[in-house]
Amino acid sequence: MILIEKLSRVSSEPGVYLMKDAADNIIYVGKARNLKKRLTSYFGISGQFDGKTVALIKQVSDFETIITGTEKEALILESNLIKHHRPRYNVILKDDKRYPSLRLDTKQPYPNLSIVRKTENNGALYFGPFSSAQAVRETLRIINKTFKLRKCKSQTFKNRVRPCLNYQMGLCLAPCCLDVDKSQYNEIVKEVIAFLKGKTPELIRKIKADMTAAAEARDYEAAAVLRDKMYALGKTIEKQISVTTDFKDRDVIGLAKSNEFSIITILFVRGGFILGSRHFRFKETMSTDAEMLGSFIKQYYETSNFVPKEIIVPILPEDSTLISDWLKSIKGTKVNILQPQRGEKALLLKMADQNAENELKEMIISIESDTDLLFRLSKVLQMDKIPRQIECLDNSNISGTEAVAGIVVFKDGKPDKRFYRKYKIKSVVKQNDYAYMAEVLKRRYKKAENSEHFPDLLMVDGGKGQLNIAVSVTKSLGLEDKFEVIGIAKKDEKKGETQDKIYKPGRTNPLNFGREGELLLFLQRVRDEAHRFAISFHRKRRAKKSMASILDTIPGVGKKRKVMLLKHFGSIKKIRAATLDEISAVPGINRTVAQAVQKALKT
Ligand code: SF4
Image 1: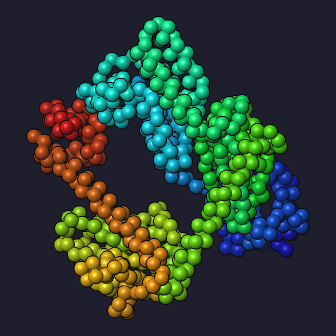
Image 2: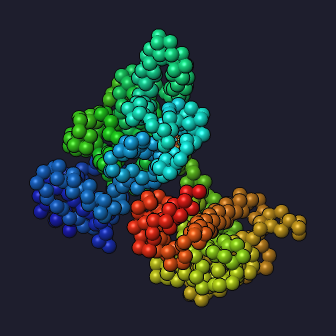
Image 3: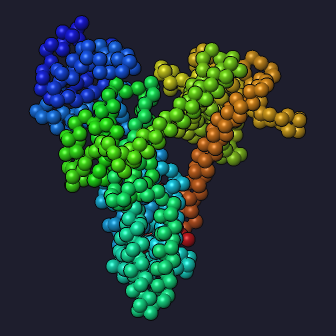
């Protein structure tokens, strides 16, 4: 009733609206050409929303509006407010670092390629994102084999005194040590860029022309090299699917929805070939399909490395003309957003939709099977709730040195690395696994005392001894009712044991998993992940320490100078990267000592 009354006072100007729930949280932000009309469509009786959206709208207890001068201003304000408030029911692209890209720093005199997870606006060229680490490595492997681009990291390049094996194998011109003509190297860079942009057919035509010219000039050696290169590139094309005859770059967006989830899939078509795809998952959105696509396109291309000239969509997004104009301001040339009805492009759209459907089906099957597994686990462990969040603790040390611990977190049956935690043991001097565990559990759960972020199940690596420690720590913190605790101990083959053992407090014998061996395997997987995580942290700590001790071996570098160097540069890696002048500039380090430091760190 209050909302209906408020609606009558809403302006018909363009602007942004913020919907709030009963607890005053902003749960949705949208923009409208006519605020009154849009909000009436939500709270009136026009019935344009599906049942799920209607249920979400019922959670709205209040709204606010902000009038803007133009629709374009509303578009920008909406995007800023979504980024700031991250409302629960908006389409929000996560900053997903899982997808690697290739970076080519063309500002360097002899650029090289590197795999990165984050793109920056620093003048470098980025290619990707690739669908997986394997896909990016395979592309890099082809480039390294086919083009004589240098393969080493910039740091190695700077410090090299003679060419590496790549030069001897004819895979690099060795600009690290030889006087390589920059324009010759730039030709290689251009070819690599063309390859990464999917312009392989054009590249092959160019190489073929060069090969013919070399043969005519009777330079048969050069012609043979070009022939091999052409053959290698031809092989890569054979593996690609050609989908359009106009050889244009375009992104094709598919959409699939279930009651709870939506999947948006992009097919990347470059030069007429599908070069890859990427899926985006969204849970519970309050938007129509057109709003959802509009919101997705704005967020995706705002940070994307590349905006194609054409974006094909299953339904025209809200404000498609406005979004096209905005994309033009990013790309510098016109960007068409199309909803084709027939021909090659409509077929491509069908392919993108099918891929989105497929991804959605796989996701639902995987969620159902994880939920089922966790439900069965709760039964075997006699828990009164499903262990949707499981945490597992493991220690790592060698005879008590650099003792560390790690806690891994599994949410809904899957590792969630954002919540993994590392601990350096602080209060225990002598090696004592029980004491390490007690310290870490206190640090982890004492902090969380007033928070909701307790796990449903805590696992510790070890048998009854470790379990007793974990139970007594949780009791001392008053958390015994917050979550269940179990211990997982390795089987003792000498005693004829065939399975790892799961201990619960108050039981002498381990639990019997009977036919539920899959559950035990799952718990072992969680334990193994904790083990891997703790060990890798321990290795890193040891490596760092042994690197720092390199400084102890350098003549003229005592404790004081070592501290000065580390304080000035922050790490051995940075000292290694520093020039002689930079090292000599550190107070207390003369040129002779700086030379000794450089020499020691280069070996
Ligand atoms: S030869 Fe030199 S430039 Fe080429 S990869 Fe090896 S170190 Fe780098």
